[in-house]
Length: 145
Figure 1: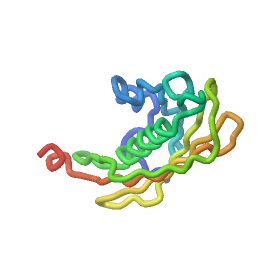
Figure 2: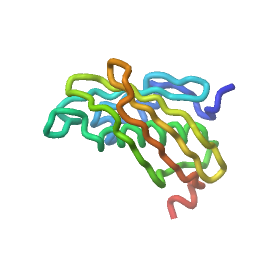
Figure 3: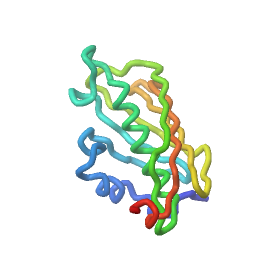
């Protein structure tokens, strides 16, 4: 059984991310499963630190992007989500020129908060980063006040 309340369509989700930081960094949603979502991000000059390896902040952006999007996909009409807290453990470096793959799953889907865990893998399948995002779920009317 799927947890998604909105259409699990990667093309539609990617279109929503146009003109955002996610698009600037080349983050693309590639696949939805019944309770997970997968994304990819290239590691090029936009993403590296001076040692020419993936900057940890880019891993955090990828994690928050995929986790927030996943949270939003579980919400009914009139509800939105915003990030409250994120942490990341960087486990292995990723050299410039690779593409990382991220898989995100819910740890908790509640009425007012959700917790999402993202694992980011190098091209060789080795875990590069693990991250946990806590989102607040808000009524759209309240969020704009």
